[in-house]
Amino acid sequence: MSALAHKHDVFQAIADPTRREVLRLLAEKERPISEITAHFPMSRTAIAKHLQVLSEAELVSGQKVGREKIYRLHPEPLTELKQWLSFYEKFWENKLSILKNIVESPGDHSIGIIKQEDRQK
Amino acid sequence: MSALAHKHDVFQAIADPTRREVLRLLAEKERPISEITAHFPMSRTAIAKHLQVLSEAELVSGQKVGREKIYRLHPEPLTELKQWLSFYEKFWENKLSILKNIVESPGDHSIGIIKQEDRQK
DNA sequence: TTGACATGAAACCAAAAGGTTTTATATAAT
DNA sequence: ATTATATAAAACCTTTTGGTTTCATGTCAA
Image (cartoon, rainbow over all chains, first blue to last red; front, top):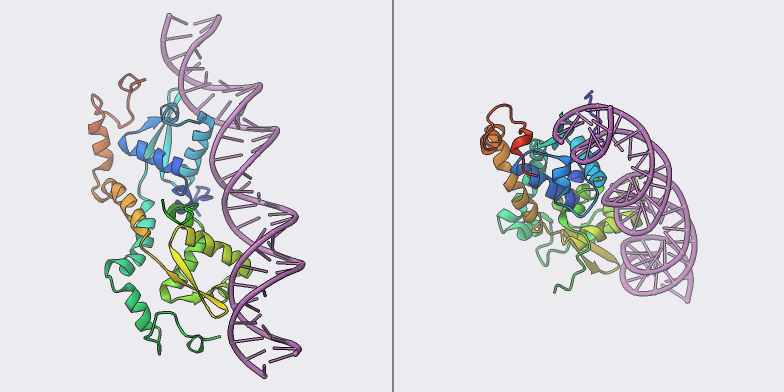
């Protein structure tokens, strides 16, 4: 098994708006914790915890340099999100999504809400 | 302003694995709450709350039909996620991401960890 | 070598999340 | 008419989340 404690996944990690903003900042360039903190109306400790969550999701990594800890973006795990999304793209990229649902519901071509007799218990 | 109570956004909505599975089930076909519940080891009430969250994010909508409430997928809000993702794709789709970061950090072409003198207070 | 700076770590806290059980109500079926 | 079904709504509970404050520690600068 991996040496990393995978407590947080990508989906959880990006759920928080502060963490998304942290990612955006790190997309520009690598930064130490204090510099990241300067962009938010909260304590350094709070940001450090957010970085911890992002780190567990392997979206960032931190390297100690002198007395600072420099964080950098690690975007690879976002591919999981992209894969997940690709499944749903077909539902909106062709505008037939609703129509397809109707057609795939056998025996009912009326309103798209399946009739009760057609639904299996 | 919108009539909908936008308490939950798409990022939060998809953060929970149960809710992602609900979305997958609704991608197959529209279903009433009880049918959705049958796929999970938890109460109908719990699932109803998850559907509420998904509904606030406008990822699903429910329509009362007889004594049932039929839910269907509404994938459009996922475009927001796709847009968000597209910003980060450039960081992994060309493998120059790390190199680019180095180059864009002026005056330092050494190791990619920016020197302290180069970082503005 | 003595501060100042950057972080780490721990204890604590309020609110939100994710679940339960209970009670009520509307509809369907017998 | 009566009973079974499907959901709604409310109260409650436990754990997690997102934040704080305080104290300790390592590193840089004067």
